[in-house]
Length: 133
Image 1 (cartoon, helix red, strand yellow):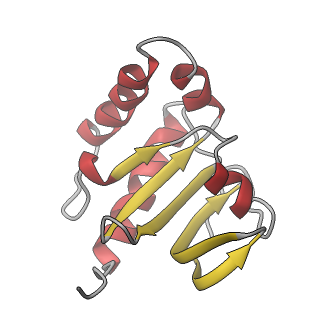
Image 2 (cartoon, rainbow, N blue to C red; image 1 turned 90 degrees about the vertical axis):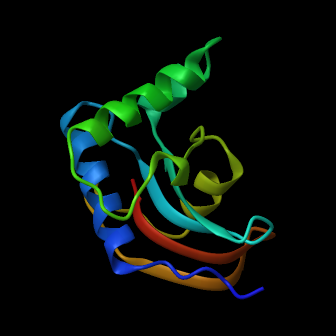
């Protein structure tokens, strides 16, 4: 099956969501569109200390996603849904791997696209990095 295409509107909406999270004190230190080859879909992967704290406690996953849902309620998103957002801890494999090769300011943005790369033994099929602080 052909790879799903990431569209410009999804990228714009992701940036708007991140800006809302920044304003709400839940700044992600990692924000990246990552293509999960096994699921044949793009996911907006977010990680940061705010989410680490929530994801580390019982029931915290629901609270972490509640923060994202609240951010969705504050914006208008035509091409992004909560189902496309994946929260991970900053110690997870993907944030640690990405952090080894690019850094951004804590609330800055970059647009760096990588395809078919091995980094520290991890294969990255397709990734569009928006933030890696």
